[in-house]
Length: 526
Image (cartoon, rainbow, N blue to C red; front, top):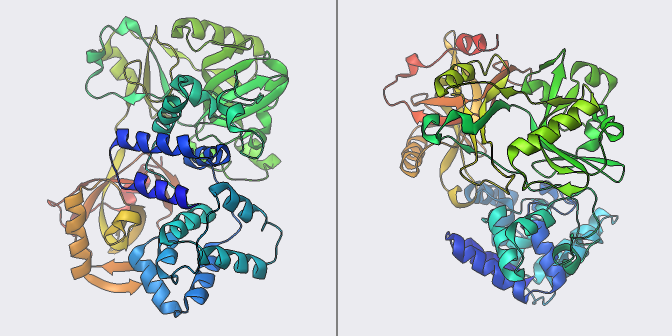
């Protein structure tokens, strides 16, 4: 654990991409194969089974540190990160551990069926032999909050440089449902096709937002246009008679969409379709908030299946008849996709239509209908493009419609986490409902560092009340809040919930009285 913690600390101390890749590669070069696997597992966003809730860990830490609850709570509000504050308050270590990362993950796994007192003793025993950095990393792993400042692309680059294998091959090998307990490092990385995982998806090809005008892309006839669907990006995989549905976030969701299981009988073996899961009814897509009723549910009832039936809108095919066809040009892949979907002839699998247009001006007018079509805008794909790995610039572009926006008043503020734990960066905004300000949403992104410091100063000078980490502030600052969608909500005091809210700009020119009204927001529901 010591070597892993030191490596993690080095990684956290640099913002330079090449330095991060070098640090990661050097660590992997010297680490045991088992530790290599667990590092790749954790760094690719996967988590070990969580056995300890935050409340219990805090209680155990307070008891071991011998400090009062109020002091821990104040420290936590100041630091803003549970793993870090526990690492900071614990007494100096009583010994030193030479055990590996793998040893400690297995140590945690062995506690699965133990009683609470045993778990508490084992966690405190671990804390006793760790230094502060090791404790921080250990706590991050067991709380499920393990985050690293290295992207998936850079993780792939580091492994590619270490092994001499091409990045697109490594990216594919690291996808899917692998686990360090069931595969070795050599099987995962060096075997001809990884190890035998028929469920393995391909890395998704991601589009860039258009940075200027579509005219800058060249001739319209070189580009295929289609709607940018507002659903869950997924791959539908059928291999060896088994159906798998993976999301872009690498969640296996096959069981969550039983109405799609019919595809097991209709698609040819060795098929991988890239598309969008959406709720679809009467030949029309339904709003994203309908799909949200399906997300996170363990049991899918008949009522849900009737009210929010799901379908896949297919817009690419990347494996056909067990052959990887990502290198085929888009036009050729499209012909194959059309053939496969037409032969399936299933309402649960819909072909994403191509938008016919002859000029950029005509496409712009079509794009203006995006909200009527319940889409986010238009996708532009170069007709000769291959299906690449990750967010590669040049061949796929997304031309989204402008977001909704409103002017809201900041009425609450809370400190951030990590490097911003000493600044108020998380804000709650309200709009007018008659003579009263009613909370509508929270937002924490969109301001510059200088603006954050200004707002932080305002919060500290204009706090009216304190509720734990939250401060009620004078309703004086107005901000423009951008968001992608709005839906009715019984959980929110305002009666509405916003999708992807973020701060667009600080409205220095607006007085509080000029902020928007709840009535105006509700008009967007229709």
